[in-house]
Image 1 (tube, rainbow, N blue to C red):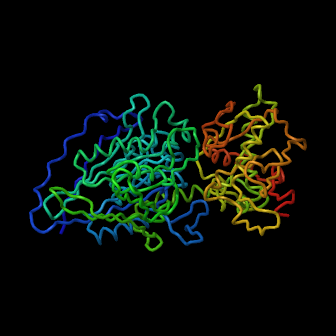
Image 2: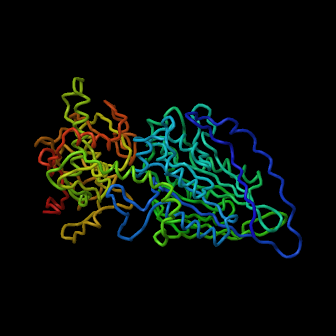
Image 3: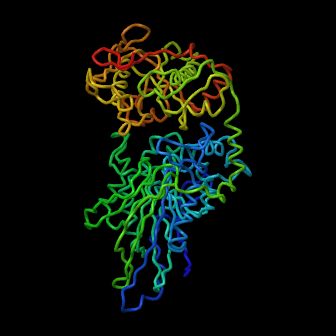
Length: 603
């Protein structure tokens, strides 16, 4: 039996470059008239399913643009919306499309060269520009709503606004506010009506929440334009409002992990990974689609302190590797629908074929991007790999730092800072990055730097740099002399991602992993001499770190000497084009090493 489904959105977001949302703070609208009450007698029940994705990061195809081949990993996961589309079709066929909703928890338009191409190379913001591939795919699949993620802001607000305009579903962000009016800059919520065979529709509210860390990580794009209060605060404001509007079910789509931790320490009064706290502290929520943390959580139950009821959380694995299913069972009680049961699970996209409707729709865009990333921009005298980057000073990471240091030196030439030594920070952003011997393409160079970071120069002292390195070295597991060394188990990668371990280029030092955190850096020297704690250095640093990402000490407060709006990835590509040849002998050296009681861990 088929039934109509109608969608009602909260306050509609402004389009274009505008940020304010007119009327968003007005009193809630009266609930829509309900259909006739369910007949008396036997209890009426209704079941429906909410499907969810998160952290798609520009993945439509099961394709890795950095290796230019089908995606694969050790677990043989697959990725992309084309695979998700097949799973969605299967669920809709089983449940009935009218008994399903499809939502997303953010980080949609950044992460692949497909996403980059339509933000920078053939931008969607151009006059008569293209429709973003993610908008095309999500429209075709039939998404009902999506929360905004922090990476939505990487290309600036105009790109995000254009993407929003191109989507046939609302982008939600109840805690993304206009900085001047403090009114919602995006629709806070959407309301969806599911028609039941029992006389009264079920009203499902989806509340969108995003990450307060945007204020730090994309400061250059949002400062003075938007502000991002805490998730708990805004959920507590909107959930009662949604219930008063007649919502029978309230679902939160939160671009925020569930752990209750933050990578930015006390720089903000709000928690980064607050989904679990929202479930615990805000009554009236039935389920939360979790995002941001890039972890897989099929089902996680949190008891609400006020009601004692379980709130069901689920986080599907990133890039379209999993699809969450929230299954709801409702019963008609006392003249209204009430939730009697909620459960969650995830489906693995590697069990599905790519939907030819989606791959066919975006075949031209895919071909354009493949051709773009395969453009030859130079040559390399040697092959370089990042595979050992987390535990060894490898040339490919030195290449990133060398390009950054050269760029900053050139920018500071002729200034009062020109005589100061320039150091550089870099991380192993991808353990699969590689530069081949021979021809080097855009995909090879871009693969070194998968994030949209830009470059800055900050002024630090020798003592501050020592603190910085001690903080970075917490990445390593304490390992006593004589213990067996397994490189795969030397790092705390789960609590400290690879991108939050920095090596400094231009200094020499040892990291003694037999020592406790905070006492690991020794033999710190510059040009063969111990570093003077009072000496001044220029640090070439990415904007994520300079803004407080990773919560490294001193850098966010350090004097900014220069900044650039060009992505570091683009700077690396341009450097290779200009040099023509990459010669590791000109920039690579082993400046840091892991030790135990003074003995190198690796010979």
